[in-house]
Image (cartoon, rainbow, N blue to C red; front, side, top):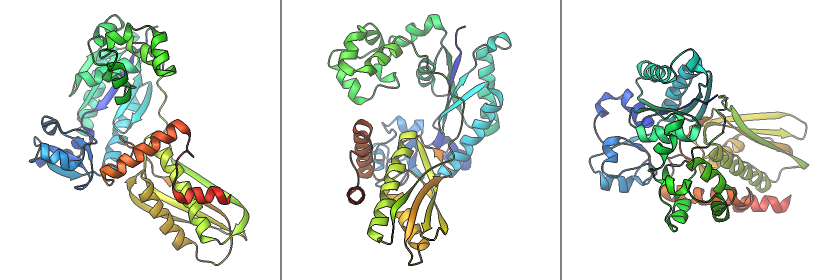
Length: 384
């Protein structure tokens, strides 16, 4: 049976949420992001006409579009709208995967027996907009890759259907940048041998791509040929991330304890960014040598940045650890997680800090989580 996979994407989601709260922002160039040294988290189509785009420094965005209005992001508001949309879709779709805070995959294979799949999906998108006020685009095709690419081509408010006989015809003229797994480095590498559109990539011998890119070359060739057997995974929201360490010997060494906590935060924050999460609740746990266990929670603006979370954890630990008694265990937990559309907190972090985290994460992705770490973490590893 031919698969029917839908990709749904809320159009300029952050901007749309902000406009629902303030109708005076309709129709004007709008940027959602942090302060003067921050970066663009999202921007309206009016701002995009001037060359503004996500992850651009806000200072540069305002030079391109001086009349744009900058609004600080509100992840609690965005999370609330995202959860509402999730509930609407989950109640109606046989299988739903929440890919990020503003995009979803649906597997509706076999629904043609009872409904027209395109008609059903079109009615679902209309329901989302009617009940939330949020515009949404979708595409229906045979797998996740094709439907996602088609959604991007149909924006804004586009509703496309790409059946199997039309898949290659649809993909061929598009830039290879449209394939989800093609980043800047891969694009530059392929461009050097004149591979810039999907048709040229699809016609390349797969063994040549494998030699150039490694095992990802095979996957890239498959996607260029419209082949993607990745299943739609049923939506299960992660509740928290946590870690704890029981020491071989009870200790009151504050330098060591703070070092352990810093290392825990760094590893958990990297996991947050890797999985696309933001957290707004930090819990520190300690256990004394007599086995008394205490915790302290801190609420903060949604983030996944090491420096913000480290500060919150160390402050909580300072207020929690009041007895002059040895500790046998410390732990850290991040909860109240929401999906973030970018790897770090675009509303608080500067362009310089964003670049630093991206560089560190790339090194960790390639060489392992211990390949690069803060000086405090190196101190702890030597102690242990």
